[in-house]
Length: 427
Image 1 (cartoon, rainbow, N blue to C red):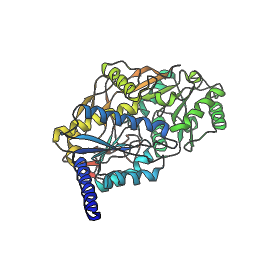
Image 2: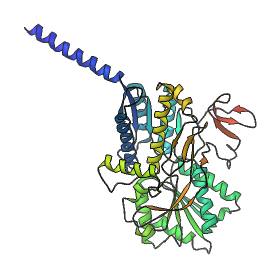
Image 3: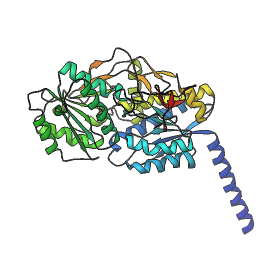
Image 4: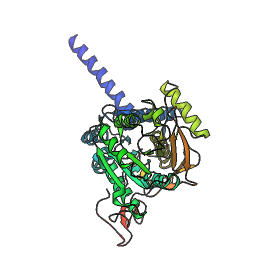
């Protein structure tokens, strides 16, 4: 009798394993690599939810290639080395077909060697510093020429700024972006003495002294502007301190590259009215696509007060493009999908069309928005057409001769147009 029970139990276990294996074979696994805890959770948790919403919508529409999509969510916890470990877990253990994730550049650079080693595919949805191109990454956020440079042009041309504070969190994105901006400002005739650069750690909270220095720097009789690459929850005390010290947008305007609707929903925006942000999307933009996206998001999340933002749109575009490429080639195999993605076009949420270029960057419009009391942005400037993202800056000697082109015959992320050769690593 005992033997029969053991045999019966073994049969049940074996049947369960067969069902699980069949289920795994009948799904397409989608990795979600976003910090759900730590200093970057304020920004990244929403992107995790965006991916899950897109998966749910795709599954309701029949999935892909006759299979349902299965999300695999991990939490790298704002711990940069952990992004590499979690990427390896997603690719080697979970066998995901694609990954949507990362926010900070240091997290992306942590994941990058693993992606290239295991031939994974990452869609990166956040503005970044450029100076990188990988066959395994599609950059759906803004490159510097799609955000930082146009923002400086706006402050220079429309507001008359001649003195500049470059304030950032102390890691690769702000430092490289500010290196590009400093070179750009100097090409426009700005002197070193009119450029102040400051870096603070992630999660920095004591802004009194730094804001005092900014206020003093802006009192020299020249129109001064702050270009902010401050990331994560450090933005909340930074903007509060601006208000505490009476710095208004009329006095010293701040243009931010990492502050959107989601971040503004966390605190009183009245002292911030008139300050600026540069993105490729704002929730306030009116279009049929955006109206539908906002409605779907609020329904999915179950909260009419939740907002949308630029990295959400970048996630949406990347997901739509990936699904379209998979359907085009009839497989999720990375090399086939990578080539199929080039040239793919989908509607963006601000009207017009987003196109994936041969350098794995999008063509996108550039918008400058002014903060309103309700935490939304009024668009005060927009490029007349879309702008192709540059992987390599034209303002740095180290990269001004480089281009990225992942199509034959170049098939290279850092092709030197002078030597007609690829120059070493692609990142």
